[in-house]
Image 1 (cartoon, one colour):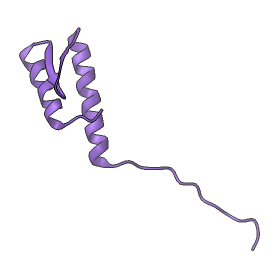
Image 2: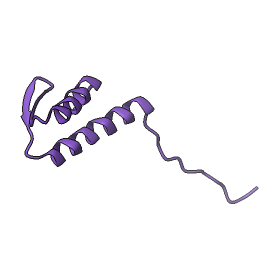
Image 3: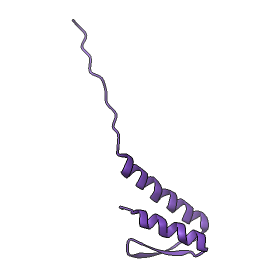
Length: 67
């Protein structure tokens, strides 16, 4: 799921207001607890940070035995 900065802002605002429902990507989401809201916000922020920082891969060096 592709989150936007606006989604993170909506969840952050809902936490600040003390409400348990927010609209994300056109869907109304009702959270069970403040902890669940914080976890969702963290997930959104992590995804946004990964998208802006880019992905990295692992490379392996190839060597030969001889001269």
